[in-house]
Amino acid sequence: IGARLGTVLAGFTSAELQMSDVFKVCTVSTAIALLVAIGLSRKLRLPSESSDGESGDPKPIDWRQLISLGTSLALCEFGLRHLHLVRTLWSREHVDHTFGGQIPLNLGIALLDPGSERAYVLVLAPLILTLLAVLRRKGILVTTLQKVSIVMALQLLACLLLVRASFLATDGTAVPAGWLLGVQVFTALPGFLLHPFALSLFARLVPGNRFGTMFGLWIVLHGLVNYLTILSVARALRFPPTAVFAIPTLLVLGGVCLWISQLRRLHLALQA
Image 1 (tube, rainbow, N blue to C red):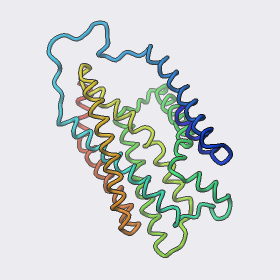
Image 2 (cartoon, rainbow, N blue to C red):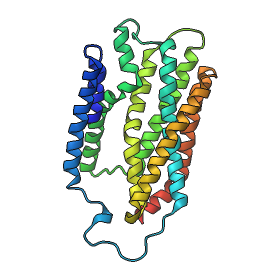
Image 3 (cartoon, rainbow, N blue to C red):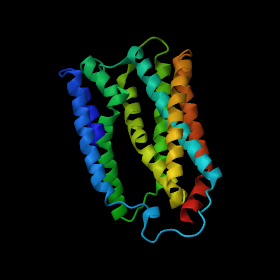
Image 4 (cartoon, rainbow, N blue to C red):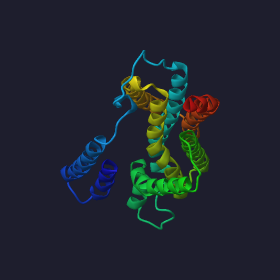
């Protein structure tokens, strides 16, 4: 929260402050978050760090399952990042950021910019967590698999909204900002929750003595997705807007289909 809040504050104060002051805001808030994380880490213990220790040979890893899981999550992450970049470039010329003249242009650009999703997360995340806590008290437990499914569905819905908005701009008219606002809301939570849920699944499927390997592969996969995103966006901008937004939609759709195909196996593996 500290790191994200610092970025939000920097965005709102960049017009009044020097860039050095903006970086100070980010640095101080991130430092606070780091101190909180250090304090919490003293109370957390991974299963592999238990006092009982582990004996015998290391447990085997189901690489086929992990590769399938990593591919589905990487496709969704790839599509989400691709969507952010092309949406930013496309919206500058095809979207009415003033909401029909109701708000200033600068405010509209700030509300619809992908960087402002952190502000949406700061508002939506506590509401979602509160809702999950209420459901838990009523005996309704939302599993990690169900949470990931909901996040992927929201992400796919955002892609479809943007494809529909691109059709509205084919005749040269400005697209109403409400379409982009809906995309902003539907992509805020997937962008914030997909990584924690993915790491939670990996941590439960990988034996405790292989956590280091799992996190190392996840970092490599994350860097590969960033690299491929830049390459794909540079080539995708040559196509019409509808085709440009169809690319992240197909990526997310592929990830969702692959996720659905392995839900049963993941459920059995988590139960075991």
